[in-house]
Amino acid sequence: MPADGCSRRRLLAVAALPLAAALLAGCASEPPAVPTPTGIALPDVDLSDPDRNGLEYLDGPTALDSVLRSVRTATSVTMAGTFTELLAAPQGSDVQPEGRVLGVSFVGTASDYSARVEVEDDSGVQTTYVRTSGADAEITTDGASCVSAADEAVTRFAPLLSPPTLLSTLLRSGDAAVTVSTGAVVEGGPGEPDTVELVVGDDTSVVGTLVVSAEGEPRPVSFTAADASGRAVFSFSQWDERASLPELGC
Image 1 (cartoon, rainbow, N blue to C red):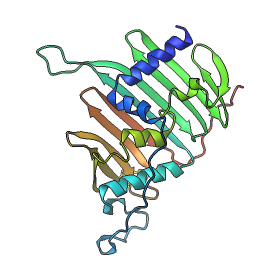
Image 2: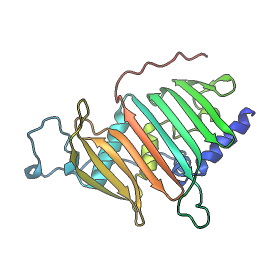
Image 3: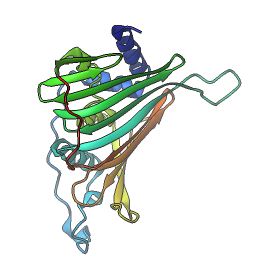
Image 4: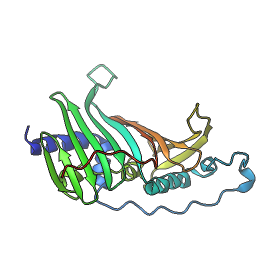
């Protein structure tokens, strides 16, 4: 398939999902300013664990703002996730069959990263690799080409290739209709941090659940969301760890 045909197929697959369509709608504008978190009522805080970040003591919107601000200051992250399209249920059934699937994996920083984007549908799997370093980028589909990092061949995948923007868009940051509630701390397993759940919803349903570290910086561990047209599942790890990236072949 010609490269421009692949591009149209990928964009159509993303736009088919309301959750993913929101990503494309938000990528042209700057993210909203994040307010400084309000103070925490000290009498309510358990100070026995110095590693805790106190996220569970914040109200939902303030906690979410704190998480998004922390994400924007991160130097590196490894992210993987999928969007799965859900089709209309056949007549007489309440089970929705799966449609197209968009998958993305990302490692690095906002300006220096390596990523893979896959779209799977009835015709097979289309895979695109993107590698950027500063102002330069290499994008590979059927063949490799070197372009500017600001080239449409790269930016058409935004905000999938920016974890802060992806999270802000999926979580509808700044949307007054969105509600956020903060859960209790959940103890982590061996080698895992304790976590807090942030449940994000609107007037009609739950938009998604964001699991965040309750220790140190409040960085996301996972995000899940679903509606009648699709579902999204993302995981995040290795925050601020130096990434080993392939050489740019340009």
